[in-house]
Image (cartoon, rainbow, N blue to C red):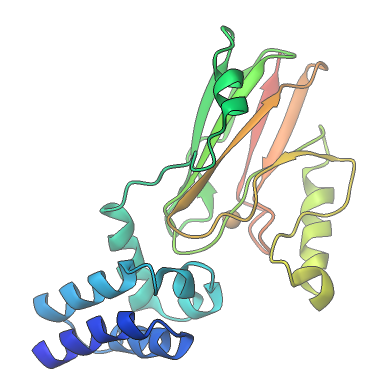
Length: 221
Ligand SMILES: [Cu+2]
């Protein structure tokens, strides 16, 4: 097991997709303390992180790796506001700021919060956290158009040219605000003014196959 642990750590010095495959392979063998330690170090290394964080095909078909990433997530603090700017700071000083934090539920394709209220025209800071092994996003749409936007996103998945970016945001005036596709163990903060029109504004994850269950409602009062 010590040899395999060292092999796992060695992959992080190589840092290529091939090394990632080798590391992913180690998850398929029984792993005790030493190897687990090596894998944790290797997966967390800056050289390896992009290979699994942005490669959901790799994680999708490797249950042990997913489990490992989920363990890794437990020990990692996700900062949803990495791109915090002076403009953001300014936005956040508004007295009537509404702060909402929504987290993707691990291995469930769900948001932990499926309903929240804001006042019409209120400034909103929405922190979206993804501790899952799968990418997720959060797309707020016009009242009654959750299914329409979700279906349009699914259609994008069938078109290699449209799916290439991996973003799955349909060109539609029904889409009001959205995060990027947030990779595993990452987050993003949205800042926006709530619509002036009261109503129920759905939000969905537009990752193909998620939107039918991964959704919620922003109620504008
Ligand atoms: Cu999702």
